[in-house]
Image (cartoon, rainbow, N blue to C red):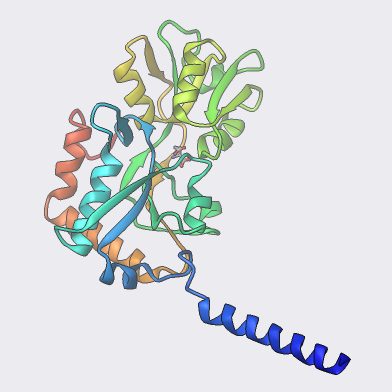
Length: 271
Ligand code: GLU
């Protein structure tokens, strides 16, 4: 009887393992993106929803708009054809790499600087935009350059951004308050929780254009080349994205999108 019981439980265990193995599907984080798009022509992009000029939710239309969004739409068309779908999922500086690694999104196009540290986790496309870190202050502020950020001042930055790391190097004495996203950081600046806010010039320009009481000061003190981040192992997809970017530079699509969002610059760079 004892023997029968243990034989039965071994058999039951074997059956369970067999069933689990049969049910095993490739997890989304491991599937090959290019193979999947052959069956269903769609790319899921992680984008900002609160960053004017790059990725901003338009509440009137419920559509997210910006330079990153238009570049993502054009890359999608370039790789998969006119009828392909570009789907957008909100990310913040802090959530973007975890969402990519979990397979929730296929790629990040969200004001993301290419850095050696990030390259340990993700691959990057070629550079598609050149930014640099700067400061935003209320007009008339006594802060006019990064050297003015001393132990008496608080500077606002966003969690998970290069800006939050770089500012510690460039203003080692300043107090730093890190917020969850750019909308919160700007609200904190407006309510006087900080004396300056720091991130890329192009992001700050978007805020200043909407809020004329605020201005950029001190020029750029870092280089922030933006890349599209893709999970490691998706080499065919990364190659396809780079090919699409090259083609868009050749056929004028890139310039058209650039001029739409940055009409005041002529040399292809926001300085
Ligand atoms: N480009 C910088 C970064 O990748 C700042 C902008 C952002 O937080 O997305 O961290």
